[in-house]
Image (cartoon, rainbow, N blue to C red; front, side, top):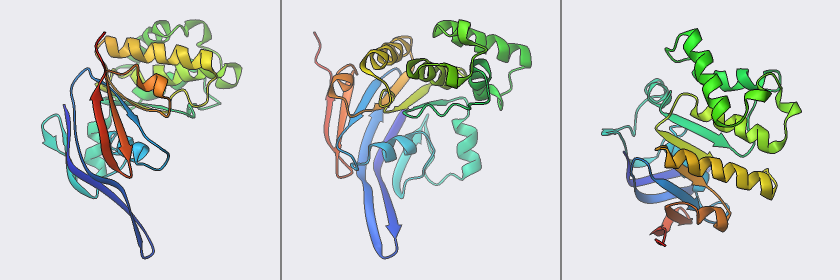
Length: 227
């Protein structure tokens, strides 16, 4: 489904060049649950941004459903990303002036679903994540855990094949963090491919596979122990 071959990413500031990702080789299969770990500055979020087509590699190949998309322009990447990739961020990124239902509906604005089908889809994901009774509330009226559930609902409203989560429990207490992790596990069990960046070894252990980065390189790539 997704394959990186000798992928690199460098940043230049003046005369200084920094290598964020150094010849990454990675295969991600449909339905996989991959946790990416490592110290701050090791390249985790950079890798997630490239997987999500939010950033472009400096070198190497990125194969997405049989196409090497390294070098594609922004218009092509936007067209490929739309409806195929969902994002869950640490900071929720909800719009305060919109209701829960309206925030979730934003994910469907640029698709080809008719208005009635969009409303039905929003109702469906709200029901799925236990948010139906909060449909008319605004983010400021919700707890942190509820806001993250709204963000997850928005991310999956278009039924993406790939869900990317960047420290999804980072702004939550332990109880709400456990709830978010349960939801992510359920989504993966239902077939969604999930890639999560986390500092939590406990949360990483819930994935079927863990990738550890150090200085932009993969130093551990291990499947979860069975049993």
